[in-house]
Image (cartoon, rainbow, N blue to C red; front, side, top):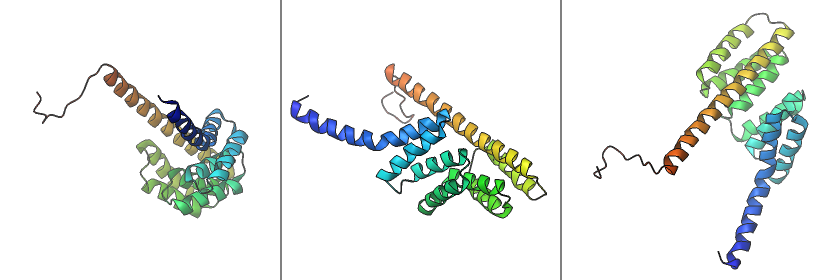
Length: 189
């Protein structure tokens, strides 16, 4: 590569990496359970790009985990103002409302989340939760149900990630072995 082309390429990489780094670090910190650190990274990313929905959702989740429910609610509501079909924002707003005893708001967000098509097991659990909230539920039971829904949501995300990783690995294997899948209508056969 010519030296004249290397510097602009490095500058572009540095700019792109600089923008993505706080988001990636925030997601990694969420995965490790370092919620204070995650919140700091998402706040840094939002300082650079204030209306980025994924960073608002990440910040909301971090604040929810830190039990800063009002701050979490504001982040999720801002995310929904920009992109109304954000499943995690609806789910976490439902969890916040559930923990506070606001069954109508919880049910509305759970219904919206269900309309967005969650995985089948999670959808079944959401249906059961909506029915349970229609009856008398103690605050301890609300906290338990909110935690179990959050766990189910995270589990569904982990399963989806594992499936995607398996698909990616299979595609890399096929490419490495130079196996090309041709359409059935290909006249090359």
